[in-house]
Length: 169
Image (cartoon, rainbow, N blue to C red; front, top):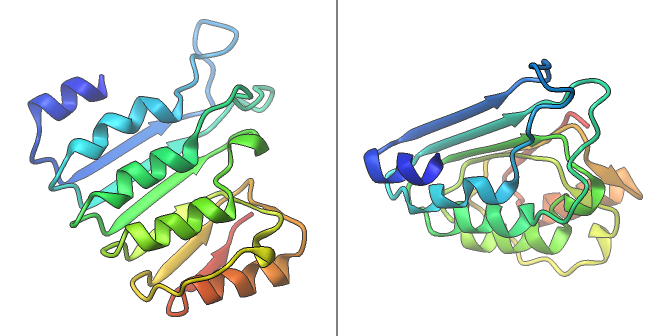
């Protein structure tokens, strides 16, 4: 479906996808995968991308490998105009973007002003940091994983020194 969207609306500036946790006729609705949204990287005029995927209360997160980090990089890295990226998605811990992916995202997305994402920050404090000044607001979405919240927040503050960090995890 997103491939068709890219063909039919190449000048799209804003994209919102909401998948509620409500059940449909099946026991479990089909869960989207990160790769389903990769074609959106072709939208050169995209300024705002908001993905919210909510699961039913008894529905487990998609637990097969699904590379959210590389899809985030692909979406944000090539977009000169992308200002806001929300990736609010309940996912299995092994699919959460790791500190290395966040550092790559910081380097690749110079225009990004607001980022909302869950992340695996377990060993973030051990990763090298190259400060990036573009981001103004970072929201850690529900599902973010820590070993030490304070150390992870310090690391994020070093990565994006101008960003206001909000933790919703």
